[in-house]
Image: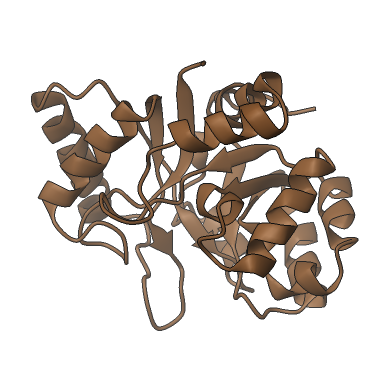
Amino acid sequence: MAYMIDIHCHILYGVDDGAELLDESIKMAENAVAGGTKTLVVTPHCNVPKSFQNYVDEEFLKRFEELEELIANENIPLKLLRGQEIYCNDRTLSLLKKRKLLTINDTDYVLLEFDFDENSENIFRRLEGIVSAGYIPIIAHPERYRFLQEDYSCIDRLKDLGCIIQLNKGSVFGVFGQKAQMFAHMILNDELADVVASDAHSPYMRTPYLREVHEYISVHFSIDYADLLLAENPQKIIDGEVIL
């Protein structure tokens, strides 16, 4: 098994609905390493209306640096990179241009989420603007969105636009219900997935432990596919390289 790279994890404590305390962040880091992850992108929620804002400022960056230092002091062999899970709305592109939101490891890749009930017209209008500005959208857990569940052909539209498809580990195993699991498996079967990530929120439930999903994809699809989704493509993303 290749060492894995997790591009979607809510490990930064006290900023969203992920880790609440520093101790939980440390336990999540240990759990990630135990599951075969060597590099992890810290992706707190941001730009969420009436909820988690987390716009980039000195205090926000200081908290990331503090976590990075503490994990190093605990001798946990995990490299942390900066990112955010950006709630995509009509303000997103402007905020990206103002550098109030983080791309993945300072590349052109942006991890985007939508309201689960958002309509496809709004989603594609916003994505087209973001792509035109030179960013590469990574669509977080599309298998969970109503617009895709109601019209599976939207996955082809996303791919044609140049979007990267990121499935959640939990969706593969049915954590988010049968419908999300069914669509995750359809995307895997059709070889339309680009990345599988943990979207971890806790060291206890929805953990960053990726070994189990790598093993599942290896058995039910192929080892090469598992390595592509959990190691090779994530490496290209953090390096800013194009995924073909």
